[in-house]
Length: 263
Image (cartoon, rainbow, N blue to C red; front, top):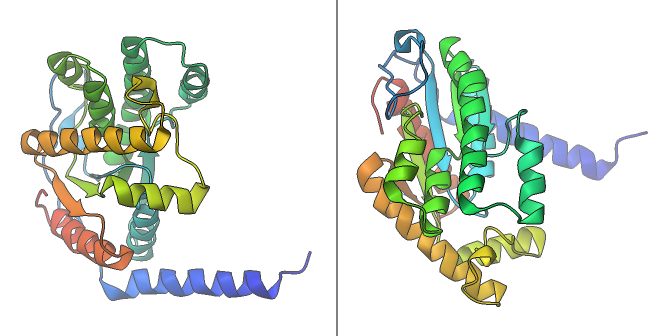
């Protein structure tokens, strides 16, 4: 089937965008930095062998995470660095079962927490750690912080949640794209013409109005992230700005991280 003129234009725009990603700021060659787990970690893992970098982007749906990750991957790979991407519900072990459990809304909060923790642990052991050992730059489209925040706003015990994710590797950098709930509503409606049941916190029964529930829930999530930022020391990015402004800030900061520093 011949390519339409519209498709050719879109393709040229993508290639031009990739060229911009590669040319505007060169990537600093990664310098080895020590790795640590938050707690007990995974047994028999030699942290000295994890020569890659783990970079995390956090933020609600509509915060621009996916767009920024695509740009960062193009920029890094365009400068000769191998990358691997991970994220929530991407485990080949439990992702499909987790989707079905959410659709039925039949699990207790504790069981759902353990389900998500299993999804994370599987990726940590089978993707993140092997990739870091191979020297890759691992980019996580959300990490344990979203999972922890979701549990905490649903009333789970803070110490229990902290212990559950003590197996996690401490990232080299974590960026939280902080976007106002009102802005998130506009972006989600523009993208999908709807709001997600879980991202709106409808399971909490705060209100029957999905819009009001979304604002209340995202405000709770935002407060929890800002509370965690003090404990986990990640960087808060003003996500209400333009995509280009955020992208340039991320690139500059990641270059700093690749030079052996932590953000």
